[in-house]
Length: 260
Length: 248
Ligand SMILES: Nc1ncnc2c1ncn2[C@@H]1O[C@H](COP(=O)(O)OP(=O)(O)OP(=O)(O)O)[C@@H](O)[C@H]1O
Ligand SMILES: [Mg+2]
Image (tube, rainbow over the protein chains, first blue to last red):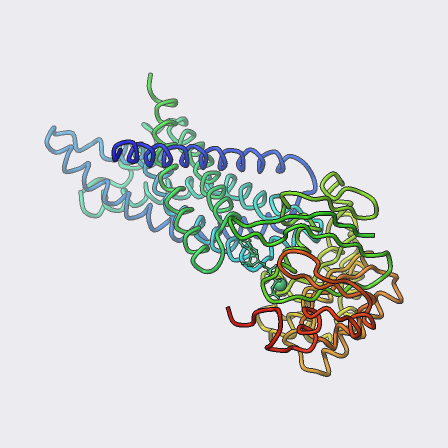
């Protein structure tokens, strides 16, 4: 008796999770299909680019700077065990561009952007602003979700590219100032060993992560529960959901890109 | 113009509307009264398609509301929400002119702004509030901006959810006159929810009372004053004693 109840609870949980996944997927598909059809809201798109892209630069830049610096120290220490200290520049560059740039950038954007989108749209939902949009013949998905999702998908790769460069610079700073590398040699090594695909794969990851962040923010915001508690819960779900999905997507993409 | 037949709407176990039948003639003003939480706001949202009723038929100008092309259907409506529902990311004038700045009714920014200023004037707000953001306004001012937005595109059908709550008596009088004017001059069809008996008398052609999920009573204002219905009598005179339990 007790066992069946436990099983039933487990089943409900699983079904709920599957249903939620389906709803998010449908929402994402809906958003994409609306993004391809007019009307387009250019002003909202530009505002979202400013909010999501430009204003995330400091966080992403600082994250990358410290990560690149720490990475250089670690690789130097690890490399010393094999008398291979000279790999520091190339491994820092590869590590930043393929993995750490996109993943940490994505997670920082998730923290900053998914939360603010979810809180903003959640508040709009709770105060009936989304209903008001509908009565003013404006599709909320088109007006609210499409500009944000488009902006995030397009700007996060740029953020990742900036983060990559700053991360490599962080490694270079530590390499030259603390580890005794010659500046010119360090830079030459970086440039020589880095392949276009290392950077390109990271930028694609960035686009996917940006899409995930904005979709999770919009979905949870627009389906927020009632009241301040509803908005709080929506914000939390958006950040947690976006972060987990980013890490899962990162594994899958890495598998697709690099498993030979 | 608007016809409701057997409309049912529940939220979980809370059966809010339990078979609402209502008919509003074109170019007339109907006022809906009823206790707090009886589902008046939900009723308007059902007509607009913001809430999906489980059963019943809603027709607007003879057309089934669920089958209508959403865009064209909603273009006929203006709605003042109970809480204002102003877009807090936009300044006041862009809120009022929202419909005129995008979509099918789009016009040049200057023209849209001029309309917004004129509508704001009609609800007793000067041009100085046009550039403010909704969060910088008092509750009553927000309500009036919401009203200006509802009438900005001169819709055929206008819903006012408690247009005068939170306003001082003089401003409430101005708004009552404005609603009356909109119906008489523009020939609009209006549905107004209110708890304010002054509003009922000032704007109603017909009055309907919602109670326990159905239309308990409907008729003209004169009929309302004369009706022997104890529910209506208790409500319009605000009596603590009567068939409607005040303390539950
Ligand atoms: N989105 C919703 N989810 C759950 N319940 C709701 C929702 N909207 C309304 N309700 C419930 O429906 C009932 C009617 O609400 P409604 O807002 O229509 O009342 P009202 O008649 O407009 O009251 P008031 O005069 O106080 O504005 C209430 O019991 C409310 O709790
Ligand atoms: Mg209400």
